[in-house]
Length: 111
Length: 113
Image 1 (cartoon, rainbow over the protein chains, first blue to last red):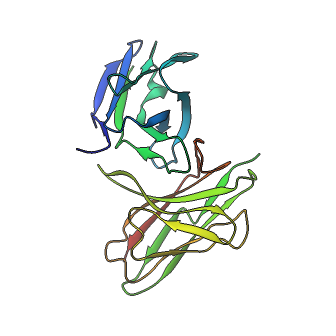
Image 2: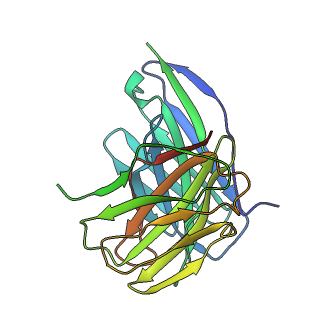
């Protein structure tokens, strides 16, 4: 079983829809969770950074962590064509360890 | 503006040739990383460095080498021993390797002639 699983999509939604992107993981020691957005031919940019369980909101974006289920989500409200990108989840456990990335979900928001 | 600069944006390598990818950051970050991204593979860690003059192998270090002589710079050499070097290479940095999010450059696309 891979440490981090992420559905590669592609996911296509109409403009204005609520988008749900998800990752599951197997290592219960993971405590720090991140979501990155990557446009084509660009580097990933950090969207959300959360510690342990709970929700974090930033504008149209909400990150949710459920450690009991080993499941994290990113919700995008009122999706826009400019949200069309690949979304990568990443996580790490406490201490001096590199991030573990999911393979990314490709999202298209159609006007 | 602070950030990470990778150059060149596109690079072509002949068979049997070593090439070096540049990565410079002005974020005053201690830690730097190199990743390889292939379609459908996600990001795979090649090497990382926590401090000047120190670096560790990642998951796919074979065929690659790095140096960290200055805090701002972390060049990656793709050697002729790397048999499948065609990929998108990403450099990242963070304040430390402990629990910190990473900030990425815009990548170098390497192709074989």
